[in-house]
Length: 213
Length: 121
Ligand SMILES: Nc1nc2c(ncn2[C@@H]2O[C@H](COP(=O)(O)OP(=O)(O)OP(=O)(O)O)[C@@H](O)[C@H]2O)c(=O)[nH]1
Ligand SMILES: [Mg+2]
Image (tube, rainbow over all chains, first blue to last red; front, side, top):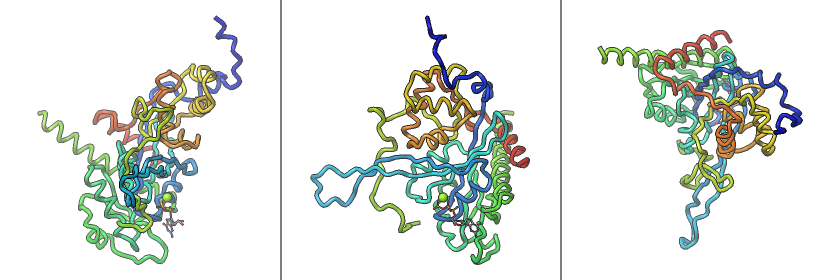
């Protein structure tokens, strides 16, 4: 037995004690919305790290082949998603994931949203229709979400109620204005998402205990 | 909907790229799930190849999510997941739990802690 004799250039005990030994919990919040609506900006405004990008690679089947006897072209394409991190405490980390702008990559949305605390749907008042798909997505999967209207300079101003009507947003879904560039504003939106998700969990718990008694 | 920038090429067929002939990671690891190098993980990783050593280093400094590992190593998520999953099986990395895996009471507790943390920011 000579395993004790290996020289380890980076395995000092100092380093291995840096991570807490006990259980760590992580959670995520999703920032969704159409192209250029300010998702990455919002992630960057509150993240402790410069937003990172990770790519999922996938195979795309070619369509519109001129010769159907040929094997369909399969090509690999990548979908990028960016994300940030907020270390709440040694044993609790919150991640913020921006959805890919291309809403047709639905499988990526499933991957990003599975198990999320909740989601923010960002709206640009110049292109409100871009937020229909994300809203439908979260509605259909019962993921707690709120709608945040990103106030771009020079964009037309609408009352929140007008936007609620235009987007047919449910009464129980919070709708509020924000400035994705500002840390305080982005932070407040995250707080509101968590509060909204919490209130739904409390309702669920009340229902569960009422059902049992 | 119907952005002109949307890719017109068609239906998606398979989410994972093949990594050394394997297409599925041995365990599903959520993108936000964090990994920490086990007490002996750094030593053990010394005898593996470069990417694994880098991951073991990275996750010994502070807990890192699956997404962070893939991003820092510059590899697609699917590829990173296969590596990380192997390293978990080999005992080099410890996979921690995500918020949604708890019961209702635990989830409420985690969300309350997240809320307190966010207010303190
Ligand atoms: N005036 C103003 N500009 C903003 C605001 N939020 C974002 N922007 C700008 O809008 C542009 C797009 O913002 P991004 O954060 O990249 O948007 P995105 O949703 O991540 O875009 P994609 O990932 O391409 O879909 C950038 O140039 C931002 O600086 C805002 O609240 N006000
Ligand atoms: Mg972006």
